[in-house]
Length: 302
Image (cartoon, rainbow, N blue to C red):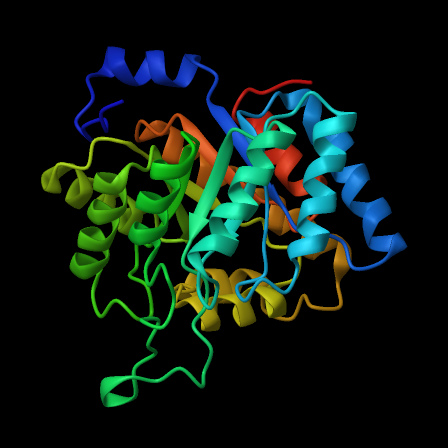
């Protein structure tokens, strides 16, 4: 599917607003029984919204492999949802990575989220930059190509509207994304962001580069602002000043914090919808209320 132009007629915009968008949800594998209960409550709450798929994260170094696998199988067996496990390749042999993928296929999985994963701090190359060349699949594009030679999965990959911390620039990240799409990926899901204009510029750059797959915005509802700041520091997401002001002094005011977080999420998805976005990926953090509210604002009903 081609990326939509930002120039819509009034009629086009009205039709876009009348259509119900597609959504997908990300979950992470639980670490204990209480977390498992919370995850399952979120799955059951969001499942009636009929997501295109739900993804399950995988530790960048494979650290959650068994828990991810168990979570994927539980959702597959106990719901009608399409499950898309994350699969990373850093530090793992080709045989191991493809073995995991083939096992997922045998279990009924048909969609993967293919990621390079974080390179360990000890793996440093020239000029102190992280070096993933010791892996059988050094980059996500290599992983996508390897997966396509093994089994014909539908594959989603990551995109970074504000640039990956290691890419050096947004332009370099667009080139990285082009390589992943050229290797066979079907969809790009972005890192979370709060600058809508940054996403729209990135979408335009991708279209100009000839990237003709869906660029799906990743939406992170703000459960705790302090937690958001930690996430943003690790992945390079810019937190605008207006967002700092909205949450200033609210860390201990749970009710007001939740109300503002809901408003922020709704405003973001509605603004993107007005710009022609018709698919959204929510990083739920295994909690449903804020994600559900944003989906409701998009016109989705259980």
